[in-house]
Amino acid sequence: MDVPHRHCWRCEKSLSETIVPCKMCNIAKYCCPKCDADDKYRHKPECEVWRPKTCGNVGCTTTGVLKECSGCNDAWFCSTACQQQNWSLHKDVCRQQKTHIKNGAQLLHTKFQTFISSSRPLDMPYYFGNSLPIDMLNLEGNEWDGSCDQPSDMDPLLKNYSILSVGCGNIRNVLYTVVSLPDKFTGKLDITLNDLDPFVLARNVLFLYLMTVYASMDNIALTLTTLWYSLHLTESQYNLIIASLKVLTSISSESLESATGGVVRVSESDLRILLEVWQNWMDMNCERANPESINLRQQRNKMFTEDIISAEGIRVYKQQIPKIYQKSVDDWIQNGVFVPTGFDRRTLTYDNPTLTGRKIGKSPWHIGEALLGDCKRPSDFTFVYCIPTDLWPFGAWDVLQTKDFQTSTSKHLIDPFYRYIASCINETIQFFLSNRIRITLINCDCLKLSDKLQTNHVNMSKSFDRIFTSNVADYVGTRTLLQAMEPLLNVDNKYATMITQYWNWYGLFPESLVDHETHVKDGTNATCLESAQKDTKQKFTMATAPRFWVQEYFNNTKWFLMYLRSDLLACTSEFSPNSTLVKVPSLQEFKSVGNLKMRDFRHEVNRVAPFRYRRNIRPVNMLRGMSRMIEWYIP
Image (tube, one colour):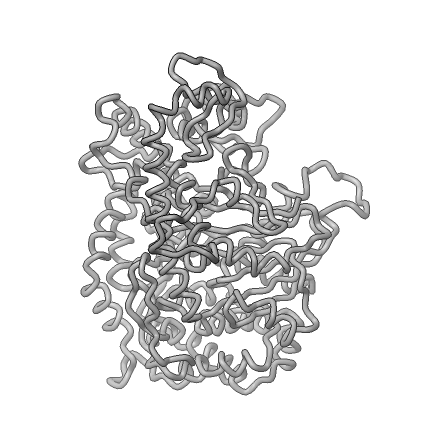
């Protein structure tokens, strides 16, 4: 659940002494009976997972703590006798699920092996995020329970923490982690950002350099916000980039660390790779009035025109957002300019070179073909506009966090997002100036990260209190990823946590997506539709509702559990795609990898990152409601 610790699951108000728990599961907590009632249908799928089960044997009404069927994880029995009596009715379902798991493992095995052998990015650089930002530390939900009022050696607010983010993407998670720190936190942060993509890391280093070296510059947070997302820049903004790139292309690793006040660390070998990106950006002709300009607007318009899938996605997105924002969304689609209302756009006379990089076609999720050919370094590519058409600022930041920056009169969606992002940048800059953070950036395959830490980064932390792995598990498999990361988790911190994320799992089992014709007979669709309309304050029918809007009100846990078992089977060393004798692993086997244990989301709430996000309370965010996060710890 994505509600902050000790807050109402409906309205998110801080819970006082009066707490209304869900009567069925006792896990969901509300501030009043009304919030409990209003959340009935949204919470129903969660409640079905958490509430006491009833024996699945026909005629038996025993409830409470029962044993689940290890074959399907979707039936519970009070005794072996009941399970045996019910087997004639249950066996077909159980066996069918095992067949699904085997078939899924065959697809995943090919995908994992292809990606691991290529060790290369499969898509365009992710300069924009494609998921909500994560507080990678979240002390209040994990180490700190809010009771340490007096300083002591055991107070988690006084300690230092090391965080590793692999497949890190852009730096929004760093910003969100910093701005989410408790006010009383006085410790230090050591953050390591690892990514296979040198283009993404080159942009991250540029941003961190600007945040530190130009910290005292007027409106630097506003400049960086524009630079992050806007297709066009002012002359002064462009000149600031060029001045910074000139330094970065001639600086040493040691000098970079010194220039940034010890905040930014990059090895000399990685710096040479990132230099190729910076050099290309610096060499571009970006003056829009010049006929020889790179003309990013033309490149961007061509991408939107040629992407048929994007056109349908835009149609659905515009259907879901409040009508007052549709004009500003049209503006973003047509112009790609990210500046607040009232800004004189005539001054945006330069293209933004940092929105360029390699451009390669997208590969189907289930195939995972490496598409880079022989191109191994940034200089091997022709730099072009490279932001995928489905990546927008409105998908990378939580709209719920922008509500304090909204005005009652503004109808421009960019305004609250722009002001919120700028505030996060400004607050992070102030934290940088406190000399309490160090950020190390490493360009390599995360599966080889442990070896690289030993050889190239001997003076940095090799033991982390948090390891956030984005959705790398989607591409290499959970067991493979955990085996590579486990040696890096801090065994001396009993709260140390690793997070694996799954974005594409439902593609393996399309049945997990609720079809509009599903559940018509029992009236579930009617109550689902009613609840979705109430939560989104929109009017639609099941025929016109965006497909992902209704997913939030149905329990597809069994399909996700099947995916996890397919994932495990695909990572098993003896697995053979063509073997009919392969043994399907149990969920219990998935829950234990080496010394790591999975925090079972079916029995407790995640402590660091929410297992899933509420989708329909965020109508402007581009959530599908299907991503999941699992936490791992050393017991």
